[in-house]
Image (cartoon, rainbow, N blue to C red; front, top):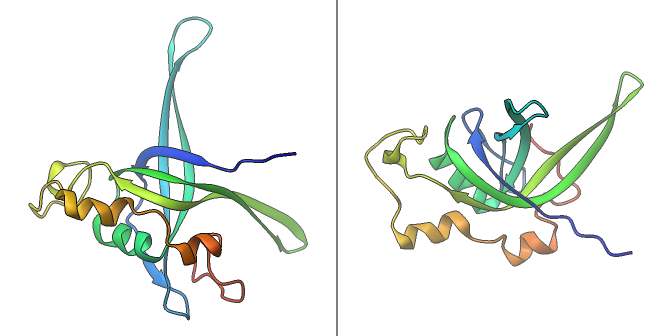
Length: 154
């Protein structure tokens, strides 16, 4: 049976981005993303629904997010779903999150949207490549995650 694991989300960052580094020196960040959906119910009334998604970014993507994204920033994330499981006090727990493999900022620093101001404006076309680069071959080969023997600093 074939399988396909791909997620594309457009939403707003829910909290300021906190950049960390694992012992090998690789950058990592976990950001919250609020994705809004608007639909009509059976009676014709509009229903606004927000879904909150945790996204993990690695390497250069994480560094760019830490530098340019802040609470409220609009962003597009492309990645894959990952289920983490663990046990706490004898209870099994799990959490579904997105491992981001591509990030596209949807507004510049001076364009509003929570980008932090600073007057830099919309990034130039040459700057855009840093924001939307696909994961490096090393990251793709490793599944865009940390080396298996390193712990996340979260």
